[in-house]
Image 1 (cartoon, rainbow over the protein chains, first blue to last red):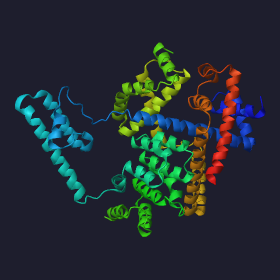
Image 2: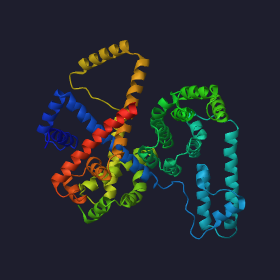
Image 3: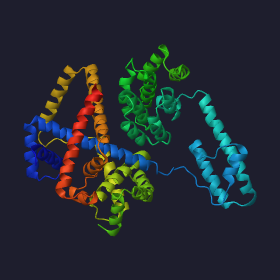
Image 4: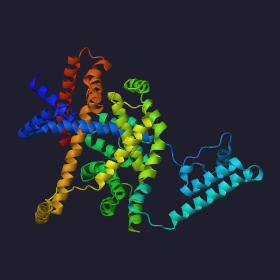
Length: 288
Length: 206
Protein backbone atom coordinates (compact mmCIF):
# COMPACT_ATOMS: atom_id res chain seq x y z
CA UNK A 1 0.00 0.00 0.00
CA UNK A 2 1.43 3.37 -0.99
CA UNK A 3 1.91 6.21 1.48
CA UNK A 4 -0.82 8.17 -0.22
CA UNK A 5 -3.26 5.28 -0.01
CA UNK A 6 -2.52 5.00 3.71
CA UNK A 7 -3.16 8.71 4.10
CA UNK A 8 -6.50 8.43 2.27
CA UNK A 9 -7.49 5.52 4.50
CA UNK A 10 -6.71 7.47 7.64
CA UNK A 11 -8.58 10.55 6.49
CA UNK A 12 -11.62 8.45 5.61
CA UNK A 13 -11.46 6.53 8.89
CA UNK A 14 -11.37 9.86 10.74
CA UNK A 15 -14.28 11.33 8.78
CA UNK A 16 -16.33 8.14 9.17
CA UNK A 17 -15.61 8.16 12.92
CA UNK A 18 -14.06 4.70 12.68
CA UNK A 19 -11.00 5.56 14.79
CA UNK A 20 -10.48 4.76 18.45
CA UNK A 21 -10.06 7.68 20.84
CA UNK A 22 -6.31 7.14 20.87
CA UNK A 23 -6.00 6.93 17.07
CA UNK A 24 -8.09 10.05 16.74
CA UNK A 25 -5.88 12.04 19.14
CA UNK A 26 -2.79 10.87 17.32
CA UNK A 27 -4.24 11.75 13.93
CA UNK A 28 -5.33 15.22 15.05
CA UNK A 29 -1.86 15.91 16.43
CA UNK A 30 -0.40 15.04 13.02
CA UNK A 31 -2.95 17.23 11.27
CA UNK A 32 -1.97 20.16 13.49
CA UNK A 33 1.70 19.64 12.71
CA UNK A 34 1.33 19.08 8.97
CA UNK A 35 -0.37 21.86 6.93
CA UNK A 36 -0.55 19.65 3.83
CA UNK A 37 -2.40 16.95 5.71
CA UNK A 38 -4.69 19.61 7.14
CA UNK A 39 -5.51 20.89 3.65
CA UNK A 40 -6.08 17.35 2.41
CA UNK A 41 -8.42 16.59 5.31
CA UNK A 42 -10.37 19.78 4.60
CA UNK A 43 -10.68 18.86 0.92
CA UNK A 44 -11.90 15.32 1.62
CA UNK A 45 -14.40 16.62 4.18
CA UNK A 46 -15.65 19.21 1.69
CA UNK A 47 -16.00 16.62 -1.09
CA UNK A 48 -18.04 14.34 1.17
CA UNK A 49 -20.12 17.25 2.42
CA UNK A 50 -20.90 18.66 -1.03
CA UNK A 51 -21.75 15.28 -2.56
CA UNK A 52 -23.94 14.35 0.40
CA UNK A 53 -25.74 17.69 0.35
CA UNK A 54 -26.36 17.36 -3.36
CA UNK A 55 -27.79 13.86 -3.05
CA UNK A 56 -29.90 14.96 -0.11
CA UNK A 57 -31.14 17.92 -2.12
CA UNK A 58 -32.18 15.61 -4.96
CA UNK A 59 -33.90 13.20 -2.57
CA UNK A 60 -35.79 15.99 -0.83
CA UNK A 61 -36.87 17.38 -4.14
CA UNK A 62 -38.20 14.00 -5.20
CA UNK A 63 -40.09 13.57 -1.93
CA UNK A 64 -41.49 17.08 -1.93
CA UNK A 65 -43.27 16.17 -5.18
CA UNK A 66 -45.11 13.47 -3.22
CA UNK A 67 -46.39 15.92 -0.64
CA UNK A 68 -50.16 15.86 -0.86
CA UNK A 69 -51.66 19.25 -1.48
CA UNK A 70 -53.17 20.16 1.85
CA UNK A 71 -56.02 21.99 0.20
CA UNK A 72 -56.70 19.54 -2.57
CA UNK A 73 -60.29 18.42 -2.33
CA UNK A 74 -61.25 14.98 -3.37
CA UNK A 75 -64.27 14.75 -5.59
CA UNK A 76 -67.05 12.63 -4.08
CA UNK A 77 -67.21 9.26 -5.77
CA UNK A 78 -69.54 9.15 -8.75
CA UNK A 79 -70.02 12.91 -8.86
CA UNK A 80 -69.35 14.63 -12.15
CA UNK A 81 -70.65 18.00 -11.04
CA UNK A 82 -67.40 19.96 -10.62
CA UNK A 83 -66.36 19.15 -14.17
CA UNK A 84 -69.81 19.99 -15.47
CA UNK A 85 -69.79 23.23 -13.55
CA UNK A 86 -66.52 24.32 -15.04
CA UNK A 87 -67.74 23.44 -18.49
CA UNK A 88 -70.98 25.37 -18.01
CA UNK A 89 -69.62 28.47 -16.35
CA UNK A 90 -66.14 28.53 -17.80
CA UNK A 91 -64.81 28.77 -14.27
CA UNK A 92 -61.94 26.65 -13.12
CA UNK A 93 -62.71 24.32 -10.23
CA UNK A 94 -59.01 23.93 -9.52
CA UNK A 95 -58.71 24.88 -5.86
CA UNK A 96 -55.13 26.05 -6.33
CA UNK A 97 -56.45 29.04 -8.22
CA UNK A 98 -58.63 30.13 -5.34
CA UNK A 99 -57.79 31.71 -2.02
CA UNK A 100 -57.97 29.73 1.20
CA UNK A 101 -61.44 30.94 2.08
CA UNK A 102 -62.59 29.80 -1.33
CA UNK A 103 -61.22 26.39 -0.57
CA UNK A 104 -62.99 26.41 2.79
CA UNK A 105 -66.22 27.30 1.02
CA UNK A 106 -65.62 24.48 -1.38
CA UNK A 107 -65.04 22.06 1.51
CA UNK A 108 -68.29 23.09 3.12
CA UNK A 109 -70.13 22.83 -0.15
CA UNK A 110 -68.68 19.38 -0.79
CA UNK A 111 -69.60 18.27 2.73
CA UNK A 112 -73.15 19.49 2.54
CA UNK A 113 -73.47 18.11 -0.97
CA UNK A 114 -72.86 14.65 0.39
CA UNK A 115 -75.59 15.01 3.01
CA UNK A 116 -78.29 17.25 1.53
CA UNK A 117 -80.63 15.72 -1.02
CA UNK A 118 -83.15 17.26 -3.46
CA UNK A 119 -83.34 20.98 -4.17
CA UNK A 120 -80.36 21.88 -1.96
CA UNK A 121 -78.21 19.43 -3.85
CA UNK A 122 -79.28 20.96 -7.16
CA UNK A 123 -78.55 24.46 -5.87
CA UNK A 124 -75.03 23.60 -4.78
CA UNK A 125 -73.33 24.17 -8.15
CA UNK A 126 -75.01 27.59 -8.37
CA UNK A 127 -73.84 28.48 -4.85
CA UNK A 128 -70.35 27.33 -5.70
CA UNK A 129 -70.30 29.39 -8.86
CA UNK A 130 -71.49 32.49 -6.98
CA UNK A 131 -68.89 31.97 -4.25
CA UNK A 132 -66.12 31.47 -6.80
CA UNK A 133 -67.17 34.58 -8.78
CA UNK A 134 -67.33 36.67 -5.59
CA UNK A 135 -63.89 35.52 -4.54
CA UNK A 136 -62.38 36.08 -7.96
CA UNK A 137 -63.90 39.57 -8.02
CA UNK A 138 -62.46 40.22 -4.56
CA UNK A 139 -59.00 39.01 -5.65
CA UNK A 140 -59.23 41.07 -8.86
CA UNK A 141 -60.20 44.18 -6.91
CA UNK A 142 -57.24 43.66 -4.57
CA UNK A 143 -54.87 43.48 -7.51
CA UNK A 144 -56.36 46.49 -9.26
CA UNK A 145 -56.93 48.87 -6.40
CA UNK A 146 -53.23 49.32 -5.87
CA UNK A 147 -52.88 47.34 -2.67
CA UNK A 148 -49.17 47.64 -2.00
CA UNK A 149 -47.19 44.47 -2.57
CA UNK A 150 -44.04 43.64 -0.67
CA UNK A 151 -40.74 43.19 -2.54
CA UNK A 152 -40.85 39.34 -2.26
CA UNK A 153 -44.44 39.38 -3.58
CA UNK A 154 -43.36 41.48 -6.54
CA UNK A 155 -40.60 38.98 -7.28
CA UNK A 156 -43.25 36.27 -7.60
CA UNK A 157 -45.53 38.46 -9.74
CA UNK A 158 -42.76 39.26 -12.22
CA UNK A 159 -41.23 35.81 -12.33
CA UNK A 160 -42.73 33.99 -15.27
CA UNK A 161 -42.28 30.35 -14.65
CA UNK A 162 -40.96 28.53 -16.59
CA UNK A 163 -41.46 30.22 -19.94
CA UNK A 164 -38.57 32.57 -19.26
CA UNK A 165 -35.95 29.88 -19.45
CA UNK A 166 -37.44 28.40 -22.59
CA UNK A 167 -37.55 31.80 -24.27
CA UNK A 168 -34.07 32.50 -23.09
CA UNK A 169 -32.61 29.33 -24.53
CA UNK A 170 -34.55 29.70 -27.77
CA UNK A 171 -33.53 33.29 -28.29
CA UNK A 172 -29.89 32.50 -27.73
CA UNK A 173 -29.00 29.87 -30.31
CA UNK A 174 -31.13 27.18 -28.76
CA UNK A 175 -28.96 24.19 -28.20
CA UNK A 176 -30.23 20.62 -28.51
CA UNK A 177 -28.22 19.78 -25.44
CA UNK A 178 -30.41 22.10 -23.41
CA UNK A 179 -33.59 20.23 -24.27
CA UNK A 180 -33.31 18.01 -21.23
CA UNK A 181 -32.66 20.97 -18.96
CA UNK A 182 -35.77 22.62 -20.35
CA UNK A 183 -37.89 19.51 -19.97
CA UNK A 184 -36.83 19.07 -16.35
CA UNK A 185 -37.33 22.74 -15.69
CA UNK A 186 -40.82 22.74 -17.16
CA UNK A 187 -41.85 19.91 -14.86
CA UNK A 188 -40.27 21.61 -11.85
CA UNK A 189 -37.50 18.99 -11.58
CA UNK A 190 -34.89 21.57 -10.71
CA UNK A 191 -32.43 19.09 -9.20
CA UNK A 192 -32.45 17.09 -12.45
CA UNK A 193 -32.13 20.29 -14.49
CA UNK A 194 -29.06 21.24 -12.46
CA UNK A 195 -27.57 17.75 -12.96
CA UNK A 196 -28.19 18.04 -16.69
CA UNK A 197 -26.50 21.44 -16.71
CA UNK A 198 -23.50 20.09 -14.87
CA UNK A 199 -23.21 17.18 -17.25
CA UNK A 200 -23.60 19.46 -20.27
CA UNK A 201 -20.18 19.95 -21.81
CA UNK A 202 -21.43 22.10 -24.70
CA UNK A 203 -22.25 25.08 -22.57
CA UNK A 204 -19.80 27.79 -21.72
CA UNK A 205 -19.15 28.08 -17.95
CA UNK A 206 -20.94 31.44 -17.89
CA UNK A 207 -24.04 30.13 -19.66
CA UNK A 208 -24.10 27.14 -17.37
CA UNK A 209 -23.92 29.46 -14.36
CA UNK A 210 -26.73 31.57 -15.77
CA UNK A 211 -29.09 28.63 -16.24
CA UNK A 212 -28.05 27.18 -12.93
CA UNK A 213 -28.77 30.52 -11.24
CA UNK A 214 -32.25 30.54 -12.77
CA UNK A 215 -32.91 26.93 -11.73
CA UNK A 216 -31.74 27.66 -8.19
CA UNK A 217 -33.94 30.78 -8.09
CA UNK A 218 -36.92 28.80 -9.37
CA UNK A 219 -36.24 26.28 -6.63
CA UNK A 220 -36.72 29.01 -4.02
CA UNK A 221 -33.07 29.54 -3.11
CA UNK A 222 -32.76 33.26 -3.73
CA UNK A 223 -29.54 33.72 -1.75
CA UNK A 224 -27.67 31.02 -3.64
CA UNK A 225 -29.10 32.33 -6.92
CA UNK A 226 -27.73 35.80 -6.09
CA UNK A 227 -24.25 34.39 -5.45
CA UNK A 228 -24.27 32.59 -8.81
CA UNK A 229 -25.79 35.45 -10.84
CA UNK A 230 -23.89 38.36 -9.33
CA UNK A 231 -20.58 37.86 -11.25
CA UNK A 232 -22.53 37.47 -14.51
CA UNK A 233 -24.54 40.62 -13.91
CA UNK A 234 -21.34 42.51 -13.22
CA UNK A 235 -19.66 41.27 -16.39
CA UNK A 236 -20.31 43.95 -19.02
CA UNK A 237 -18.91 41.70 -21.78
CA UNK A 238 -21.28 38.82 -21.12
CA UNK A 239 -23.77 38.65 -23.97
CA UNK A 240 -26.63 37.37 -21.79
CA UNK A 241 -25.96 39.87 -19.05
CA UNK A 242 -29.47 41.33 -19.21
CA UNK A 243 -30.95 37.97 -18.21
CA UNK A 244 -28.50 37.64 -15.33
CA UNK A 245 -29.38 41.15 -14.11
CA UNK A 246 -33.13 40.51 -14.36
CA UNK A 247 -33.01 37.31 -12.33
CA UNK A 248 -30.54 38.83 -9.89
CA UNK A 249 -32.95 41.71 -9.32
CA UNK A 250 -35.81 39.24 -8.74
CA UNK A 251 -33.63 37.25 -6.34
CA UNK A 252 -32.82 40.43 -4.42
CA UNK A 253 -36.52 41.25 -4.23
CA UNK A 254 -37.30 37.79 -2.94
CA UNK A 255 -34.72 38.41 -0.21
CA UNK A 256 -36.54 41.67 0.53
CA UNK A 257 -33.53 43.72 -0.59
CA UNK A 258 -35.29 46.46 -2.45
CA UNK A 259 -32.37 48.90 -2.88
CA UNK A 260 -29.99 46.60 -4.84
CA UNK A 261 -32.93 45.35 -6.94
CA UNK A 262 -33.84 48.93 -7.87
CA UNK A 263 -30.17 49.65 -8.64
CA UNK A 264 -30.01 46.74 -11.12
CA UNK A 265 -33.37 47.55 -12.69
CA UNK A 266 -32.39 51.20 -13.11
CA UNK A 267 -29.25 50.07 -14.90
CA UNK A 268 -31.38 47.92 -17.20
CA UNK A 269 -33.66 50.88 -17.92
CA UNK A 270 -30.79 53.33 -18.48
CA UNK A 271 -28.82 51.00 -20.72
CA UNK A 272 -31.96 49.71 -22.49
CA UNK A 273 -31.22 46.12 -21.50
CA UNK A 274 -33.88 43.40 -21.63
CA UNK A 275 -37.64 43.76 -21.86
CA UNK A 276 -38.09 47.48 -21.19
CA UNK A 277 -41.85 47.24 -20.69
CA UNK A 278 -41.37 44.68 -17.94
CA UNK A 279 -38.46 46.56 -16.34
CA UNK A 280 -40.34 49.84 -16.23
CA UNK A 281 -43.49 48.20 -14.87
CA UNK A 282 -41.53 46.59 -12.05
CA UNK A 283 -39.70 49.84 -11.28
CA UNK A 284 -43.05 51.64 -11.14
CA UNK A 285 -44.46 49.00 -8.79
CA UNK A 286 -41.42 49.33 -6.57
CA UNK A 287 -41.77 53.09 -6.49
CA UNK A 288 -45.39 52.84 -5.24
CA UNK B 1 -32.83 -6.38 11.41
CA UNK B 2 -36.43 -7.51 11.02
CA UNK B 3 -37.68 -9.33 7.96
CA UNK B 4 -39.62 -6.29 6.82
CA UNK B 5 -36.57 -4.03 7.05
CA UNK B 6 -34.45 -6.67 5.32
CA UNK B 7 -36.85 -6.69 2.41
CA UNK B 8 -36.90 -2.90 2.21
CA UNK B 9 -33.11 -2.82 2.34
CA UNK B 10 -32.68 -5.28 -0.50
CA UNK B 11 -35.17 -3.42 -2.66
CA UNK B 12 -33.44 -0.13 -1.91
CA UNK B 13 -29.99 -1.52 -2.67
CA UNK B 14 -31.32 -2.91 -5.93
CA UNK B 15 -32.14 0.69 -6.90
CA UNK B 16 -35.89 0.59 -6.26
CA UNK B 17 -36.63 4.20 -5.32
CA UNK B 18 -40.32 3.54 -4.81
CA UNK B 19 -39.45 2.03 -1.41
CA UNK B 20 -38.76 5.46 0.01
CA UNK B 21 -41.75 6.98 -1.78
CA UNK B 22 -44.00 4.41 -0.15
CA UNK B 23 -42.56 5.11 3.32
CA UNK B 24 -42.92 8.82 2.68
CA UNK B 25 -46.60 8.46 1.78
CA UNK B 26 -47.31 6.23 4.77
CA UNK B 27 -45.79 8.42 7.47
CA UNK B 28 -45.45 11.94 6.10
CA UNK B 29 -48.80 13.49 6.93
CA UNK B 30 -49.17 12.10 10.45
CA UNK B 31 -45.61 13.01 11.40
CA UNK B 32 -45.76 16.54 9.97
CA UNK B 33 -49.12 17.30 11.59
CA UNK B 34 -47.86 16.06 14.98
CA UNK B 35 -44.72 18.18 14.69
CA UNK B 36 -46.72 21.27 13.74
CA UNK B 37 -49.18 20.88 16.59
CA UNK B 38 -46.70 19.78 19.27
CA UNK B 39 -43.86 22.20 18.59
CA UNK B 40 -45.70 25.17 17.08
CA UNK B 41 -43.53 25.28 13.97
CA UNK B 42 -44.67 26.19 10.48
CA UNK B 43 -45.47 23.42 8.04
CA UNK B 44 -42.51 23.92 5.65
CA UNK B 45 -40.12 23.59 8.60
CA UNK B 46 -41.87 20.42 9.79
CA UNK B 47 -41.81 19.02 6.24
CA UNK B 48 -38.09 19.66 5.95
CA UNK B 49 -37.35 18.02 9.32
CA UNK B 50 -39.37 14.99 8.25
CA UNK B 51 -37.43 14.74 4.97
CA UNK B 52 -34.17 15.06 6.87
CA UNK B 53 -35.29 12.15 9.08
CA UNK B 54 -36.28 10.14 6.02
CA UNK B 55 -32.84 10.75 4.51
CA UNK B 56 -31.18 9.48 7.73
CA UNK B 57 -33.51 6.50 7.77
CA UNK B 58 -32.56 5.65 4.18
CA UNK B 59 -28.88 5.91 5.04
CA UNK B 60 -29.17 3.71 8.13
CA UNK B 61 -31.30 1.20 6.29
CA UNK B 62 -28.65 0.87 3.58
CA UNK B 63 -25.97 0.45 6.23
CA UNK B 64 -28.06 -2.24 7.95
CA UNK B 65 -27.98 -0.33 11.22
CA UNK B 66 -31.69 -0.24 11.97
CA UNK B 67 -33.01 -2.50 14.69
CA UNK B 68 -36.56 -1.42 15.32
CA UNK B 69 -39.18 -2.14 12.70
CA UNK B 70 -41.34 0.72 14.01
CA UNK B 71 -40.62 3.00 11.05
CA UNK B 72 -43.18 5.63 12.05
CA UNK B 73 -41.71 5.87 15.55
CA UNK B 74 -38.19 6.18 14.17
CA UNK B 75 -39.18 8.89 11.72
CA UNK B 76 -41.11 10.89 14.28
CA UNK B 77 -38.34 10.74 16.91
CA UNK B 78 -35.65 11.66 14.38
CA UNK B 79 -37.73 14.51 12.90
CA UNK B 80 -38.32 15.82 16.42
CA UNK B 81 -34.59 15.66 17.21
CA UNK B 82 -33.71 17.45 13.97
CA UNK B 83 -36.26 20.14 14.79
CA UNK B 84 -35.01 20.60 18.36
CA UNK B 85 -31.42 20.76 17.15
CA UNK B 86 -32.34 23.48 14.65
CA UNK B 87 -34.17 25.42 17.34
CA UNK B 88 -31.16 25.14 19.64
CA UNK B 89 -28.90 26.43 16.88
CA UNK B 90 -31.18 29.43 16.38
CA UNK B 91 -30.60 30.57 19.94
CA UNK B 92 -27.02 29.52 20.48
CA UNK B 93 -26.18 29.94 24.10
CA UNK B 94 -22.70 29.23 25.37
CA UNK B 95 -22.66 28.78 29.17
CA UNK B 96 -19.60 30.15 30.94
CA UNK B 97 -17.52 27.83 33.09
CA UNK B 98 -18.11 28.35 36.82
CA UNK B 99 -16.03 31.06 38.53
CA UNK B 100 -14.71 32.45 35.26
CA UNK B 101 -17.55 34.77 34.29
CA UNK B 102 -15.62 37.95 35.01
CA UNK B 103 -12.54 36.92 33.08
CA UNK B 104 -14.64 35.74 30.16
CA UNK B 105 -16.67 38.91 30.10
CA UNK B 106 -13.57 41.10 30.27
CA UNK B 107 -11.88 39.34 27.43
CA UNK B 108 -15.08 39.40 25.41
CA UNK B 109 -15.45 43.19 25.88
CA UNK B 110 -11.80 43.67 25.02
CA UNK B 111 -12.14 41.64 21.84
CA UNK B 112 -15.25 43.55 20.88
CA UNK B 113 -13.46 46.87 21.37
CA UNK B 114 -10.57 45.69 19.25
CA UNK B 115 -12.96 44.53 16.54
CA UNK B 116 -14.73 47.88 16.57
CA UNK B 117 -11.44 49.73 16.12
CA UNK B 118 -10.43 47.54 13.19
CA UNK B 119 -13.88 47.09 11.75
CA UNK B 120 -14.33 48.19 8.18
CA UNK B 121 -17.81 47.21 6.96
CA UNK B 122 -16.91 47.58 3.29
CA UNK B 123 -13.83 45.43 3.61
CA UNK B 124 -15.75 42.85 5.62
CA UNK B 125 -18.53 42.67 3.02
CA UNK B 126 -16.01 42.28 0.23
CA UNK B 127 -14.22 39.53 2.15
CA UNK B 128 -17.48 37.70 2.75
CA UNK B 129 -18.48 37.99 -0.89
CA UNK B 130 -15.07 36.76 -2.01
CA UNK B 131 -15.14 33.75 0.26
CA UNK B 132 -18.74 33.00 -0.80
CA UNK B 133 -17.76 33.06 -4.47
CA UNK B 134 -14.66 30.99 -3.80
CA UNK B 135 -16.72 28.41 -1.94
CA UNK B 136 -19.33 28.29 -4.67
CA UNK B 137 -16.56 27.72 -7.25
CA UNK B 138 -15.11 24.88 -5.19
CA UNK B 139 -18.50 23.24 -4.78
CA UNK B 140 -19.22 23.54 -8.47
CA UNK B 141 -15.83 21.98 -9.25
CA UNK B 142 -16.56 19.05 -6.92
CA UNK B 143 -19.91 18.33 -8.59
CA UNK B 144 -18.44 18.64 -12.09
CA UNK B 145 -15.53 16.37 -11.19
CA UNK B 146 -17.90 13.77 -9.77
CA UNK B 147 -20.13 13.89 -12.85
CA UNK B 148 -17.04 13.33 -14.97
CA UNK B 149 -16.22 10.00 -13.31
CA UNK B 150 -17.14 6.67 -14.86
CA UNK B 151 -20.43 5.06 -13.80
CA UNK B 152 -18.69 2.33 -11.77
CA UNK B 153 -16.65 4.85 -9.80
CA UNK B 154 -19.69 7.04 -9.21
CA UNK B 155 -21.69 4.12 -7.87
CA UNK B 156 -18.86 2.98 -5.61
CA UNK B 157 -18.08 6.43 -4.20
CA UNK B 158 -21.76 7.30 -3.78
CA UNK B 159 -22.43 4.14 -1.80
CA UNK B 160 -19.25 4.47 0.25
CA UNK B 161 -19.05 8.22 0.88
CA UNK B 162 -22.67 9.33 0.80
CA UNK B 163 -24.60 6.29 2.00
CA UNK B 164 -21.81 5.32 4.38
CA UNK B 165 -21.89 1.64 3.42
CA UNK B 166 -18.92 -0.53 4.33
CA UNK B 167 -16.53 -1.82 1.69
CA UNK B 168 -17.26 -5.39 2.79
CA UNK B 169 -20.95 -5.11 2.04
CA UNK B 170 -20.26 -3.21 -1.17
CA UNK B 171 -17.90 -5.94 -2.36
CA UNK B 172 -20.80 -8.40 -2.51
CA UNK B 173 -23.38 -5.89 -3.62
CA UNK B 174 -21.34 -4.45 -6.49
CA UNK B 175 -19.73 -7.75 -7.46
CA UNK B 176 -16.04 -7.08 -6.80
CA UNK B 177 -13.79 -10.14 -6.81
CA UNK B 178 -12.28 -9.51 -3.37
CA UNK B 179 -12.00 -7.00 -0.57
CA UNK B 180 -8.57 -5.92 -1.79
CA UNK B 181 -9.90 -5.27 -5.27
CA UNK B 182 -12.70 -3.01 -4.06
CA UNK B 183 -10.33 -1.24 -1.67
CA UNK B 184 -7.88 -0.50 -4.49
CA UNK B 185 -10.73 0.59 -6.77
CA UNK B 186 -12.10 2.93 -4.14
CA UNK B 187 -8.66 4.52 -3.75
CA UNK B 188 -8.23 4.93 -7.51
CA UNK B 189 -11.70 6.48 -7.86
CA UNK B 190 -11.09 8.92 -5.02
CA UNK B 191 -7.69 9.84 -6.41
CA UNK B 192 -9.23 10.48 -9.84
CA UNK B 193 -11.97 12.56 -8.24
CA UNK B 194 -9.42 14.74 -6.43
CA UNK B 195 -7.40 15.14 -9.65
CA UNK B 196 -10.47 16.05 -11.69
CA UNK B 197 -11.54 18.47 -8.98
CA UNK B 198 -8.22 20.30 -9.34
CA UNK B 199 -8.65 20.45 -13.12
CA UNK B 200 -12.24 21.73 -12.89
CA UNK B 201 -11.32 24.32 -10.31
CA UNK B 202 -8.58 25.78 -12.48
CA UNK B 203 -10.97 25.74 -15.49
CA UNK B 204 -13.67 27.60 -13.53
CA UNK B 205 -11.24 30.11 -12.03
CA UNK B 206 -9.84 31.00 -15.44
